[in-house]
Image (cartoon, rainbow, N blue to C red):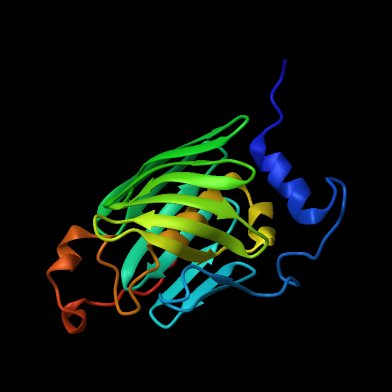
Length: 206
């Protein structure tokens, strides 16, 4: 018996029906992305912006800077590959009854499973058990310290209408977006560098 991919289910839930025609990407409203306590990221069409972030996102590319770290990755239905910070990025995307993503996004170890109603797994040094709602995820996060029982991440339903590679990358950015000044997760070298010594990077021109 053939499986109905989870991503198709999420698209149906987000749009109301599989054949419905929504706004084009350029006409769609902007959406908040990530944790309220982190950098104020916003997704507007093919742009992801914040005070220290500027990224371009299409169906096959994510490039620019995230909290000062350069990102340049290629996206397909089964893989995310390229570079994040000064590290390689390689994620495997497996679609079936669930959506499983594992590998490395720069220095970030990723291994999570997305189900129609929840997300479970690890991103970076944190483990997550989150329930899915209309505006994002709410649930538990454990990063080696006290358990956060009401952890919330903005990830509005229309973002699941993006391709698997886009949505997987957006979700990782949303989860690691916890430090307003600079990320301590994207690159280990940045953990010991004070914010005023982390050099900014501009988007890469192609």
